[in-house]
Image (cartoon, rainbow, N blue to C red; front, side):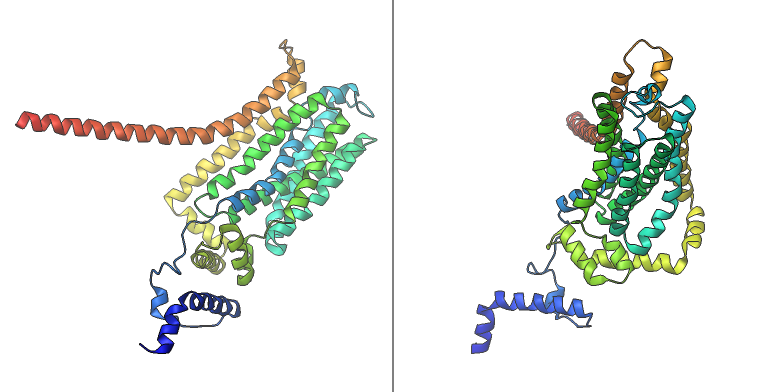
Length: 386
């Protein structure tokens, strides 16, 4: 055995480290290099695990979902204080019933305006930049509400906070979807509705025990907290790959998935998806999808559920809960019922998640019962034959 070969064997660890450094340099410089066959094998040294770390993705999604919490508190801002606004308690002036209707309605009108353009802005300047920019109209809107001196200021404040809430919902859904790997993408996507319900519950509790001004200040602080925390969160890898910034995409994926995750495969999948959609165009993709029976069923179910949610008036009930219950003369404290209503919404989401787990356990139990029954049947059949 030659001296150089012995030196190579005794310094295998250093050689492996140098090789990995070389590979990283090649990837950054976008060079084309053919690797030795030994490194194309399933070596324990270079084989990456398919699963990534979940904690960084969950933390980033929760911080992004603070915007959904803000949207929920914006929706339910009038739920607990409608009677106070009509009577002028804890407020510079009293409003009429018609004005209260506009105060509640201007929020969804503002949301419908900005939500149409948020997706385009996200594609232009990035998801992270869009989320941070949306903090500005949210703070401006809440400032107008906190220091309002006329019903016009209140109208403008509600419209602007509604615009921010609509943009926040689009941003949160997009960001959480793009940072999550496919195994937990559905769970991260559910953070949107969960945090909206948390915001509604927060409004129900804070509106009962605090003055209108202090309650509004707390609502306005939420987007500020989001803005500070989100400064430390990464951009989505999907956006970087779409803009051909592969080095930054690799850095983000390593941060979100961990160093032991095989990011090359995910980058290839995302790049193929973007290339396919770019070549075909949005209209062509929509037409091709609608030709499939499965896509038609998905569209009917999805749009049907959304239309049913809007038509049944749950958002209107959430906005005017205090006014509705007070004028219904049901003989119970309307503010307490509002808190129970918000708690019911939050528990419904939690129970849905727990219900999926419980159903899985029930399916496993049924499978075990069927297996045991089959074994008993085979034993009895064998005994009869003997």
